[in-house]
Image (tube, rainbow over all chains, first blue to last red; front, side):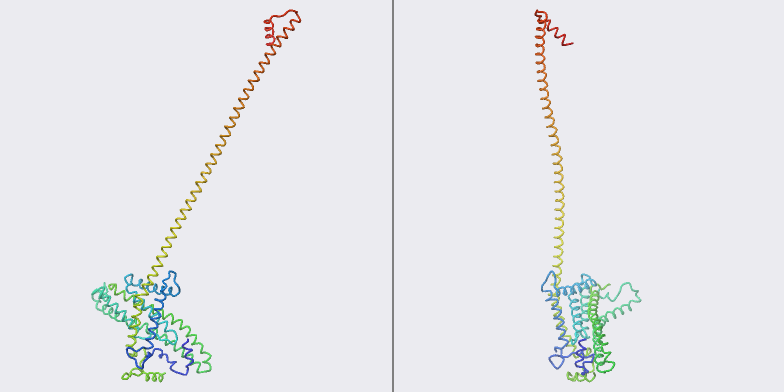
Length: 261
Length: 184
């Protein structure tokens, strides 16, 4: 919404109406993008990490028996993720709790901070979400092999399948396993990307209708109302997708703990 | 839109990398290495902070709170039990006291009644004694009076006989005559 108001001030510039422009990664202190360049994406990664740290470390520094608001928020986050981890993986899965918690908090803060106008959404970059997915699948494979040895391969061989069907089943299981990091990363990335583009497009409608005069000016508040509703919806999506990411992480890690189903 | 994009890419064009301009930004591989590096740094730092500091701390807070709540509950239950025991003891004490008071009242009542009976008996015995002695005295007085009357009658009879006959009658005939008169 505020993005739209910002757009009004620079309505002449077509750049502001470009719904893709918000995803461009630009270096902040140098001309070229290299591996070490500090970009707007890097800036918001740092902001997200600091925000989570602020909540979880400073918020709990009082160690109060009766928590204040910040500590209560930190405890609610803890218990929410902990119950998710316990529910899907059991008590044994609590060894992955710090990983799942960090992932969930990083993603949910990225998604929500990204909804603030003029910010950059870290999770709208496929490379970021794919790195997270690769981290999860890597953890599944490494821990699965470490814990179960070759028994981990039973993940691909369900018990009680006729020998004739077995090759196909194994093939399907392997394909489904390989597609997990793809689906995990693309789901989050696409949700963030599409949501932000939609918001931006509706914002562009307001500007274009205001600029075209006549009847369109009268109707221009309509897309604005739509943006308000969409923003609420995107807020839901932001939290929901972070939750989906976290719970799928738990489900996949559960395979590493109990590969035999 | 397209022109703006072009001018942007022209400003940041890397020598030898012509791919920047028309690529959809999230798929532009030029910034992948930078993103991965910074993601590794920030997420790694976040993971360390969470796993080393924040999560153990929250776990300790929750545990501490649970322990405090359990302790307080136990304490309150113990106190309640103690209060109930004290209430029971108090009830018992009151019941005992009431019982004792009742017993005391009954005993006193009996004792008083007994005392009253005894006092009445003593009084009656005393009265009886006195009545007896008085009757005795009356009988004595009566006997004395009767004796005196006999003497008077003897003297009067002697005198009357002397007066009528002129001679003194003997005492024995007088006495027999008197006895005959008394029985008649």
